Image (tube, rainbow, N blue to C red):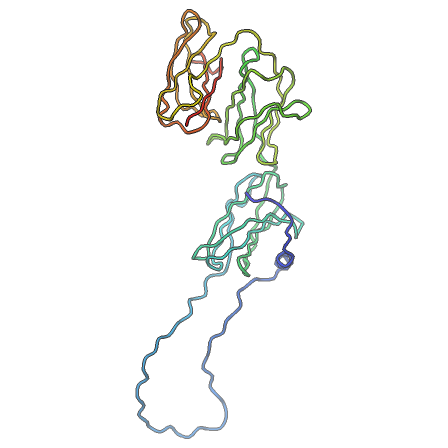
Length: 341
């Protein structure tokens, strides 16, 4: 995703302004040698002569002039945060340059994306910006000294789509934050703040699931009161959800991994405490965005404890959550964590 800034290259910016006024950028035309017939006094009649055939020589013919340098944009419109793919064709081969996205009504302020063409003079870059205001943006490219002749546009139809977040917990313990409608393929930063904006805790950088959802599992150390869950993509805040956190008191159910780190492919052993005696439960392993990696059923004994193992075959390396629910329920009763190495 390109970053927006003011160009400091004055010559390029001037060229960009000139392009906006309708100038057509084209490579210099190179004229080769041509035969020219002279006009003047009549020449004497030709006489028959015998001339030895010339010895063939090696010649070099210039490659055909490529097509007109041009751009295409797919899709041509969408809300801020949409990934717009800009494809360059027929530019100088194996050359560096930039793709410039001009802000509406401001000819010298634009987003600039670096680009390098391949051996065919083609390249592809993606423009994605969550803070771009709605409007029509002109797309230009400069590769070497060559610019595009067509002037495609990107239409930002609406501000960035803001996802929704719901917060659930049991008696104020183990809050679960479920998000939906968030962009995919983007690193999201999620933090919990006080009403004044002070950060209380944060989560690892995550990406949403393919359907734009995520699920994050909190601990029992949050202070009671009004708190905010803030979801950002870079400097752009996508969502701020206020929730009421109550104090987690008493002996609450808990689950612990028997090891801080587990080698991928080896069994992950766990132990649970303080559950209802005889209750049928499900222990799930979930990635840091809530994707289910594996699960196993367990039953609490007469003291409310249980133990078991999970296969970690195919688990990704990194932190995972152990989540306990009542069998057949989505209500989270306890959360633990460990790391796959």
